Image (tube, rainbow, N blue to C red; front, side):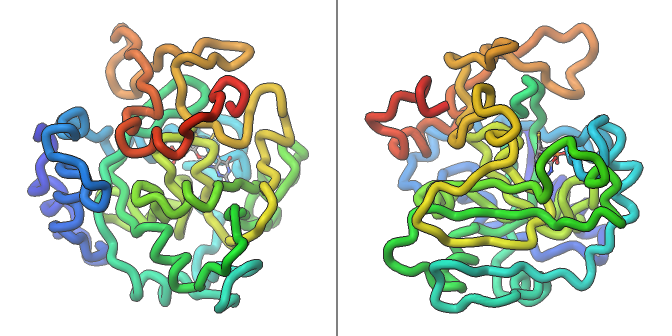
Length: 301
Ligand code: MTE
């Protein structure tokens, strides 16, 4: 592995507020596909992932609540109050309620997951997230029979989120997953990066990460999670239904109407580096292709 556990441990160890990193789970999830029944050799593509550095990940952001420029979120997200913070879990669950993020975190096993991250704008990074499986949070709330989708909502607080003073999107930012996508072991609620708490510009205190989908599905600063039997509306689909579908799986064979999705610009690879080919499901085909068996992915883009 080009990226060794030890590097992470060193950084995490140097950070007093670092969350507990579960070494076994990390090694298992990344090197051998634990929970997915995958042979270690088949995960070899993931073994060489070398994460982007902290500055790249935290200075080149999309978080329209703080402006549309890449440098707006690092500049303006400082104003966001992230404590106290609770997530309302409601809809078709046995135990609805406002869950304090600290209580959630104390119940969950925080692991490191080094994932590819591919934005629909055709740039990519590799990010060493810390987080826990969304499935564990949903189990805590108790998903009821008949629930088919999970809807997510970001905080609406225009006093602190200056981008929300402009009608760039229909606020609050909302997203959604099919229940089987939400329960997939690759789907996490991320609570940090490089063993440090989630920076505000990256979606503090907790954001979704779905590594086989375009980055806009990975909704930041979540305040509501709703279990429902209807496909929930999503912000980018509402803003441009011809351009952004509900599924938004990374797919090099289905272009965005205004640009190709066949290749990507790897952030940090240098100004003159060539673009990399984009991988089907962002490289997670072995793990997730079965979720979409029999579906026309050009139609359900
Ligand atoms: N979540 C909210 N609430 N608001 C946003 O504007 N942008 C999305 C996604 N989640 C966004 C969001 C997009 S387009 C991308 S590419 C990723 O966040 C960027 O995540 P990063 O800045 O941590 O790399």
